[in-house]
Length: 453
Ligand code: HEM
Image (cartoon, rainbow, N blue to C red):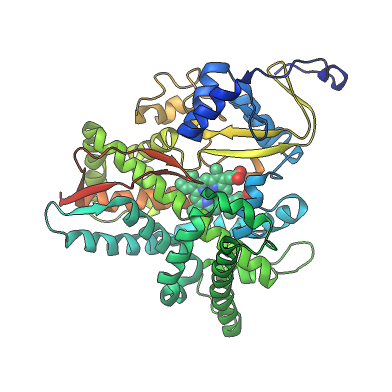
């Protein structure tokens, strides 16, 4: 990127703009598809005028600048995070500034590689429960893969957070989280930014959120009352975490916000990755056969442990390539707090910036034959030649996903067990249509049939 003196910035042109009508038509189709189309049509820096003007950046160097090099000057002060914040409070995803930095320091050790290896057993046990239910299916019976993947990832994240304490509340919690997950999609979610408005949708949201808070507070209070238990789940570790400077632990409210954030951030994302991986394997039987061969050769039918993963390189490549084509988090937003230059264009202070993983992961300059599913791209030898910011399913820089290693472990262990035992076949004629909510889901789910391998 060229170096531009601050005095020269005001002389730079604004980026090319998408015509208003075209923008409206594109948005109605799908936001990630719209961002991909705009990038391919207009380039790496584009102005998209609508209710608000959005600056779309689609070049790994620009992404590096926003997420890493100048990150404190690109905040999460946008309407999206304010809406999501109605559910997540001041948990890590929505928090910002020094408060966020303090919390991240406290929570980082809980998600370090050393710590998450202990989750093998939980992941494998929850996957075995699902496998048992699949084993009982009649031949040809339809199974909704999206629901089963959501269930297993919810069980994994809730068990790693709360241990067995969650079991009594699990059904109610799943119901609440389903509603809350849909919340940002609804137009009424904007109204929750004005909680004093006496609207039925606001009252309903307040009721659900209060119930969610009460369940989580109840679980944490119960644990506090029991004192040191050494159970090793995440609640235990967060209760023990102390700030290195002040020696303080987390307040009750902060703990609640963090746990709700982890439940939501760590659940649908991993489920989405699993669903799309199965979808892609269903369309590429040769790749599936090679993957199953690797798993059976190295594991001989047993479940994998994290220690096995280095011997399963193709499994990782398949998951990486699946998250390239269908990144579970398809885009993120930031607010610029200074004038900046990207590719010779001026992006003014105050601009709403959109970074789309979906568009970036299909950028033709970095991904030849970008729409093709080809796990060979992630052959470690070829990885080295790639710009490190053209593949960011977990974002990058200081605000990157804290659960990335846990998610990769979980996705690989679930697949390793299920793929060895079952053939999952898409229901013929069912059209899978992507739908962008907060995560990149399928519009009408994903029906499949299951048969023993
Ligand atoms: C395939 C699965 C996952 C994907 C693709 C994913 C992706 C992401 C992305 C893109 C961000 C950045 C969001 C932003 O800038 O607004 C993020 C942040 C975050 N993720 Fe994940 N995530 C996954 C799984 C998980 C899991 C399993 C957990 C924890 C149990 C988790 C917890 C978080 C948290 C707490 C943040 C906020 C981090 C911060 O700002 O300090 N995620 N994730």
